[in-house]
Image (tube, rainbow, N blue to C red):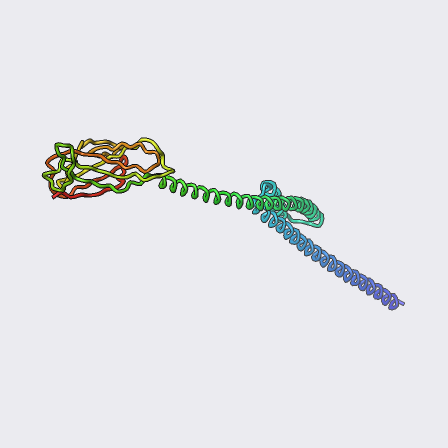
Length: 294
């Protein structure tokens, strides 16, 4: 009887131990499952955090590209980019969970919506700027063509003015000097012997010119002997900082027709040699010639 009782107690103890063993195994399995689920959850949160960070980086890069366009919205774009940079800094430092990560996602979506709106405005501004640039380029081309045309006209007018100025200058022809001996009767006897000469007759012709300015003209005649002396009046006139010593002046009333001018310069004791005759219009040498006395 007592043996039966002991066997019964042993069975109860074994049963209890088996029950406890099964409970322990079940508990360990449950703990392992919960730990695995927690690890999976942590990995998922980390992955989501990285994805949100990548999305925020994309927003920042998009703002950087838009700011580089240098439009009138640049200040607004910079302000929005700083919001993105601030959120990235917060996310980087924070230990997120599913709830806090959801808040970051919501903030990201709001910033993304704002960015899309602003980038559309930037595209509109770029198109408007391109249209303005095209119009400006067309205007620049037209202005350049007009400027070139005006320069051509100015050049043509300058050439025409030079042509008119050149054409309006009087041509002096046939500057000659004849040497004479004046007889008591008033008769002139031509001679080239220096000791006999007492009159130099200088003559020249002003050619006809229909576009030249008519009116009184004054020419200065300078005669230099073989000893480099100026004959005649030996008067000096100044034109600015330039001076001219001349022998006599020849006044002419010019009316656009051919005019022959003759002027006598009396003298005595002429030296033998070559003489130089220069004709000036003010201080400009117009023509010259020479003659020789023996």
